Length: 155
Image 1: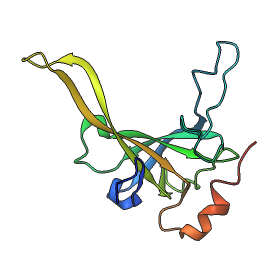
Image 2 (image 1 turned 90 degrees about the horizontal axis):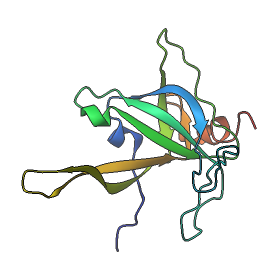
Image 3 (image 1 turned 90 degrees about the vertical axis):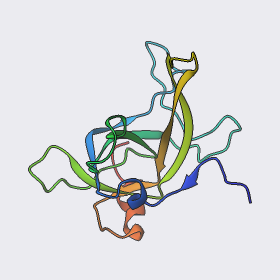
Protein backbone atom coordinates (compact mmCIF):
# COMPACT_ATOMS: atom_id res chain seq x y z
CA UNK A 1 0.00 0.00 0.00
CA UNK A 2 1.29 3.46 -0.87
CA UNK A 3 1.39 6.08 1.86
CA UNK A 4 -1.31 8.71 1.59
CA UNK A 5 -0.18 12.33 1.35
CA UNK A 6 -1.57 13.32 4.74
CA UNK A 7 -1.24 10.69 7.44
CA UNK A 8 -2.43 10.25 11.03
CA UNK A 9 0.00 10.87 13.88
CA UNK A 10 -0.48 10.75 17.61
CA UNK A 11 -0.36 13.97 19.58
CA UNK A 12 2.48 12.52 21.68
CA UNK A 13 4.47 11.68 18.55
CA UNK A 14 4.46 15.32 17.44
CA UNK A 15 4.48 16.99 20.88
CA UNK A 16 6.15 14.49 23.26
CA UNK A 17 6.68 17.13 25.99
CA UNK A 18 3.32 18.83 25.50
CA UNK A 19 1.87 21.70 23.49
CA UNK A 20 0.59 25.16 24.35
CA UNK A 21 -1.69 27.46 22.36
CA UNK A 22 -0.28 30.95 21.90
CA UNK A 23 -2.91 33.58 21.13
CA UNK A 24 -6.42 33.08 19.81
CA UNK A 25 -8.06 30.65 17.41
CA UNK A 26 -8.20 32.51 14.08
CA UNK A 27 -9.82 32.05 10.69
CA UNK A 28 -7.56 30.76 7.92
CA UNK A 29 -7.81 33.30 5.09
CA UNK A 30 -8.12 32.10 1.47
CA UNK A 31 -5.89 34.66 -0.19
CA UNK A 32 -6.85 33.49 -3.70
CA UNK A 33 -10.53 34.31 -3.08
CA UNK A 34 -10.03 37.37 -0.86
CA UNK A 35 -9.77 41.02 -1.74
CA UNK A 36 -8.44 43.83 0.41
CA UNK A 37 -12.01 44.77 1.29
CA UNK A 38 -13.39 41.23 1.67
CA UNK A 39 -11.43 38.52 3.51
CA UNK A 40 -12.78 35.07 2.64
CA UNK A 41 -12.29 32.20 5.08
CA UNK A 42 -10.62 29.10 3.62
CA UNK A 43 -12.48 25.79 3.63
CA UNK A 44 -11.20 22.24 4.00
CA UNK A 45 -11.04 21.23 0.33
CA UNK A 46 -7.99 20.30 -1.71
CA UNK A 47 -7.51 21.09 -5.42
CA UNK A 48 -9.31 17.86 -6.33
CA UNK A 49 -12.34 18.99 -4.31
CA UNK A 50 -11.75 16.42 -1.56
CA UNK A 51 -12.24 17.30 2.12
CA UNK A 52 -14.96 18.18 4.58
CA UNK A 53 -15.92 21.56 3.09
CA UNK A 54 -15.88 22.99 6.63
CA UNK A 55 -14.32 26.37 7.46
CA UNK A 56 -10.65 26.24 8.48
CA UNK A 57 -9.35 27.70 11.74
CA UNK A 58 -5.77 27.89 12.98
CA UNK A 59 -3.85 28.15 16.22
CA UNK A 60 -0.20 28.86 16.88
CA UNK A 61 1.23 26.08 19.00
CA UNK A 62 4.36 26.22 21.13
CA UNK A 63 6.17 22.89 21.36
CA UNK A 64 7.28 22.30 24.96
CA UNK A 65 10.18 20.05 23.85
CA UNK A 66 13.40 21.87 24.79
CA UNK A 67 15.23 19.93 22.08
CA UNK A 68 12.98 21.27 19.31
CA UNK A 69 14.87 23.37 16.78
CA UNK A 70 14.44 27.13 16.64
CA UNK A 71 12.21 26.94 13.56
CA UNK A 72 10.17 24.07 15.05
CA UNK A 73 9.35 25.64 18.42
CA UNK A 74 6.20 27.34 17.10
CA UNK A 75 3.99 25.61 14.53
CA UNK A 76 0.51 26.22 13.20
CA UNK A 77 -2.22 23.60 13.56
CA UNK A 78 -5.35 23.95 11.43
CA UNK A 79 -8.76 22.64 12.46
CA UNK A 80 -11.77 22.15 10.15
CA UNK A 81 -14.94 22.98 12.09
CA UNK A 82 -18.36 24.51 11.48
CA UNK A 83 -17.85 26.96 14.36
CA UNK A 84 -14.73 28.52 15.84
CA UNK A 85 -13.09 25.89 18.09
CA UNK A 86 -12.90 26.76 21.78
CA UNK A 87 -9.65 25.91 23.56
CA UNK A 88 -9.79 24.19 26.94
CA UNK A 89 -9.81 26.43 30.00
CA UNK A 90 -6.40 27.76 30.98
CA UNK A 91 -5.96 26.85 34.64
CA UNK A 92 -2.40 28.18 34.90
CA UNK A 93 -1.00 31.64 35.64
CA UNK A 94 0.71 31.58 32.22
CA UNK A 95 -0.64 33.20 29.05
CA UNK A 96 -0.44 29.89 27.13
CA UNK A 97 -3.06 27.16 27.29
CA UNK A 98 -1.91 23.55 27.38
CA UNK A 99 -3.74 21.42 24.79
CA UNK A 100 -3.87 18.00 23.25
CA UNK A 101 -4.89 17.58 19.62
CA UNK A 102 -7.36 14.89 18.59
CA UNK A 103 -7.31 13.36 15.10
CA UNK A 104 -3.95 14.93 14.28
CA UNK A 105 -2.57 14.48 10.77
CA UNK A 106 0.71 15.55 9.21
CA UNK A 107 1.78 16.42 5.68
CA UNK A 108 5.50 16.82 4.93
CA UNK A 109 6.63 19.14 2.15
CA UNK A 110 9.83 20.75 0.92
CA UNK A 111 10.35 24.43 1.67
CA UNK A 112 12.80 26.40 -0.42
CA UNK A 113 14.63 28.93 1.71
CA UNK A 114 15.41 31.28 -1.16
CA UNK A 115 19.16 30.95 -0.74
CA UNK A 116 21.85 28.74 -2.21
CA UNK A 117 24.62 26.70 -0.62
CA UNK A 118 28.32 27.14 -1.49
CA UNK A 119 27.91 24.86 -4.52
CA UNK A 120 24.96 26.85 -5.92
CA UNK A 121 22.25 24.35 -4.94
CA UNK A 122 18.93 25.57 -3.55
CA UNK A 123 18.74 25.35 0.22
CA UNK A 124 15.71 23.35 1.27
CA UNK A 125 14.27 21.78 4.36
CA UNK A 126 11.38 19.47 5.14
CA UNK A 127 8.56 21.20 6.99
CA UNK A 128 5.24 19.89 8.26
CA UNK A 129 1.64 20.97 7.84
CA UNK A 130 -0.58 19.82 10.73
CA UNK A 131 -4.36 19.39 10.86
CA UNK A 132 -6.51 18.24 13.76
CA UNK A 133 -10.14 17.28 14.24
CA UNK A 134 -10.23 19.09 17.58
CA UNK A 135 -8.38 20.09 20.72
CA UNK A 136 -8.95 19.13 24.33
CA UNK A 137 -7.34 19.55 27.73
CA UNK A 138 -4.43 17.13 28.17
CA UNK A 139 -5.69 13.73 29.33
CA UNK A 140 -9.29 14.37 28.26
CA UNK A 141 -10.66 11.37 26.37
CA UNK A 142 -11.08 11.54 22.62
CA UNK A 143 -14.77 10.70 23.01
CA UNK A 144 -15.30 13.96 24.91
CA UNK A 145 -13.54 16.01 22.24
CA UNK A 146 -16.21 15.78 19.55
CA UNK A 147 -18.63 17.90 21.53
CA UNK A 148 -16.12 20.14 23.23
CA UNK A 149 -13.89 21.71 20.62
CA UNK A 150 -14.96 21.22 17.06
CA UNK A 151 -18.65 21.83 17.54
CA UNK A 152 -19.03 24.51 20.13
CA UNK A 153 -17.99 28.12 20.00
CA UNK A 154 -18.94 31.34 18.33
CA UNK A 155 -20.56 31.37 14.92
